Image 1 (cartoon, rainbow, N blue to C red):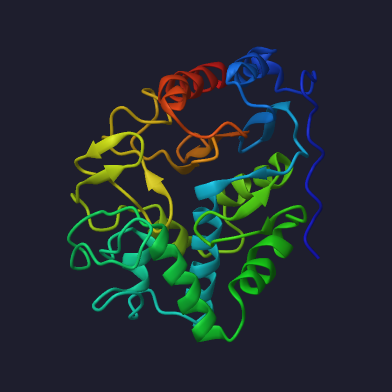
Image 2: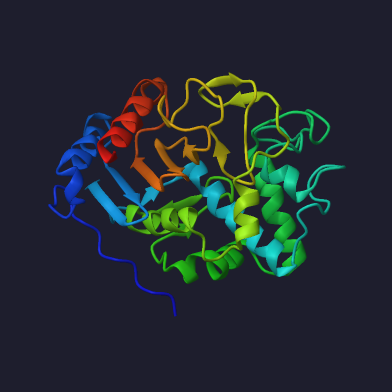
Length: 293
């Protein structure tokens, strides 16, 4: 049986790490100005949760943050021998590795092939849907079953459910995502070798378009997480290290982790991504990073 997650500090609580006083809570509180009807932000490190501001139990559509949990599910299947990382999947010549790292050549939201595999970084929801279909064909289970049994149940993410595409259809809460952020930080479900691989840039030097942020050359990506690298501007902030990794979503949310420090941040809301996000997210993340020291 998996351990129950520690209770979350309430918004404005004094249970924030003593060395930070109220500064982390204050930095997170800026999410209240984002214009969302419902919102929540949190930060944690290897010692635990630093602060939470907002509705920690509210169900949020987490859009493309879903891809991180889909990647986890696929990599568990690889470790179990159900899939092979370099086995054929998706369009001709493509592999599971290509699909995870957005190098299969598939279009953003269709089955149209825009490039030979491994030649361009083309961000693709279709690629993650192809991954899920491949896992279903190989395992005989629905993707939702594999996700639930492989990831959600072992981590105790009981309020998280798939309500649509494996690329963007999860609904979750801050309480659950803080549990996943800790798994992201120090995986229990994946081996050390797989963890290192998912955090390593796949097909280095490929250029691509980061949706909403423009063309990036290179456009670094791991086996699921986006890697900051030399991208600028970037949603995780100007002070984010090159190895910072995570994902953002079109519902107005993001999750990032700085592996060397262990600091991570999650922001959830119901105001769709737009120009406001490009204007506010980098400074918000920089403020959280500065407050956490």
